[in-house]
Length: 89
Length: 424
Image 1 (cartoon, rainbow over the protein chains, first blue to last red):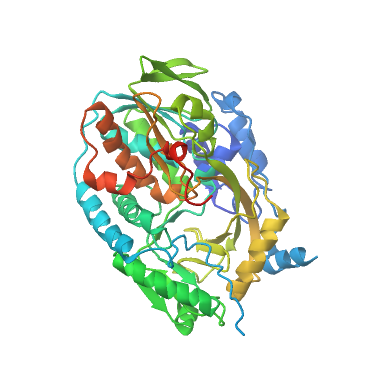
Image 2: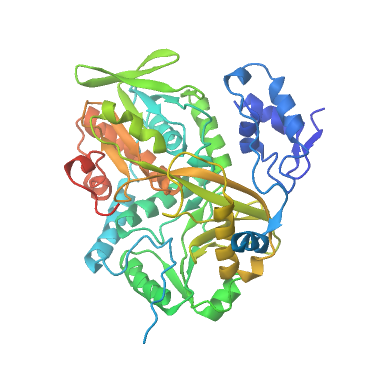
């Protein structure tokens, strides 16, 4: 199970996530900050449930914080030019 | 009739029109003296002293690192996640070029310390690709020419780029640029690994880190700070250091002075990984800045007075379109780059844009290191290291060395009680 790919965009495996939890990460956002899981082109659409599940089953410390992985704009990638168009509308 | 040309060099904090040659020359000798002072080995100089640090951002963590190395028994409290506010939501800039002349010596020393820490094993991704500030009109070109003179007097290496050289060195930059000035020693790092690496060293050295644990008050007895109160109860200490960044103002009463920091949102957006940009330096101009991360994404940011005050860290379309517009004008070659993520952080601003660093006037043993105006990630190494000197000046009666007071002597946290700062 440890070699299972959790985040395909950033090549993060289950053992990477486990190591982050063991080092003190106590919510999905903290796992992201330590592993880059969820920081690639899909922005966690694939890995988020797996990361949150792994944090959720880790037990100690989890209840201290319920912060889940942050959802960031834009929801799908847009170019800089697209952002200029938003401004001009 | 002449048309007034705008200055959009928002990363040029040094005003080349009001900075004097004396000030610039002093920055060179301040840096030399500080560098000599930093050769001293601090190991054991704080042996046995109990220190509580309030705030687990990069300032608090780096301070904890240097105090632990000096032998102190450190216990650090963070109300939420470690390194997750401005410390984890910044562009990782570690530079001196562009800084106000009064901050240049400190910023240069901090770059050197980041380099030392990294050579010593800290996983910071620190490297020095430089910082190129790009002019788009003759007024900006003129300001950069004046800045070049001041930074040369300050001993900070720079390189002037003609418009054609800028096109060659900075892939995608506007061919209509008016030239650039580049700080060639400026660095950058990766906040997430740096923070994780500091935490790992602290834990291995026996420091206690309490995240998701808010400090409620500073405990004082007989005019002396004795520790803090949190959900865990009372934690005794000989010294308490407030490194609470934008949340510092909540400790004004304990500190006995107005710790006036203004929180302001600052936003960043990130492109997909882009190939062929491996040597891209930090760049700025046209009201924005950008850098390449070690992973290959380009981060684009650039706040300013137009941003919201407060602790809101949601991204706004206004800011993202502002960044998109100004970045694609400065770098038309990147206009098609896909933005995958945007985020916001909170920077803390002081009235004169210099840090709050020194003793609190209310009691012995209470210290402040905050108010870094968005420069905290770069400055944290120097400020963490100099906190060892600061605390020894209070507890051991060791006077603050002249090399240190020359660069932090003006940063007393109670200075706004005496008089209003230079410029809000």
